[in-house]
Image 1 (tube, one colour):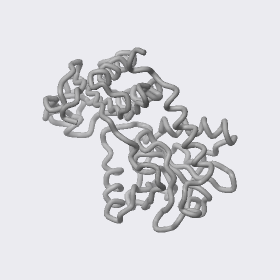
Image 2 (cartoon, rainbow, N blue to C red):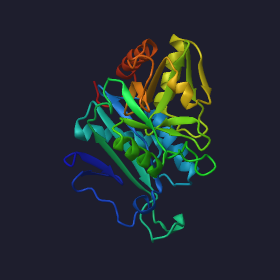
Image 3 (tube, rainbow, N blue to C red):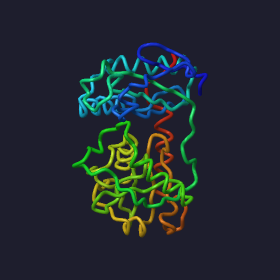
Image 4 (cartoon, helix red, strand yellow):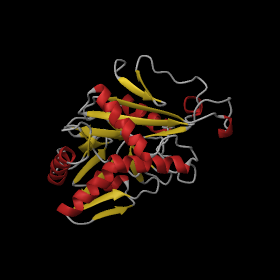
Length: 290
């Protein structure tokens, strides 16, 4: 990855030569935002939606954006072309920038932008995954809005450490009231008696893949229900799956040592996986001129 080109504050530099100031508030305080975007066969999937969420996050934390959405899109395409990547994961990052130590954002000089791109297969592959319910709870909405995709992911990281220690593939996170929110980097869905459900967005990140899954589900199966979801709902579901940009759609075969249904990918999950793979290969912004 260090041989790849990186977009850094308007310049294209090699990853090995790219550097961020030790005084950057993104490094010192997690003061910044980011996105994760996928490229399939030279098409950037849902670029506009990801950039819209990036700019929403910026507005939420009053972060000045040095580029317009159109300029961001151009920089992303330029980064992919510089690395000749047709299948990749892209990570645009915006920090508050360098400044004097202290939490006051007025101490910073300017925002800093970096765009990283690298080849990356889906996080978990195709086999059903095992989840562990983490003791660490997702941030309460009254503390920090879960819709902000910030650089501060310490709660998710601590949950991931716990799932790693128990040999699970990922952690399931609950809200302060004990309701299911999401996995560490993906949203969660369940099927019960033909009804497709997902937790409401009270504390969860409004995933782009989550929205795509809901749109595909409405076309194929009808309504998707956003509601409070308990662990018992998951334990007794006919199917459970997670969905995210990095993971795509993958079945959940086990939660907290309990096998979900038969532990295999269910029919509805399999249909959505098929529809999703078809969609990402046939839509999106072209990177290279044909």
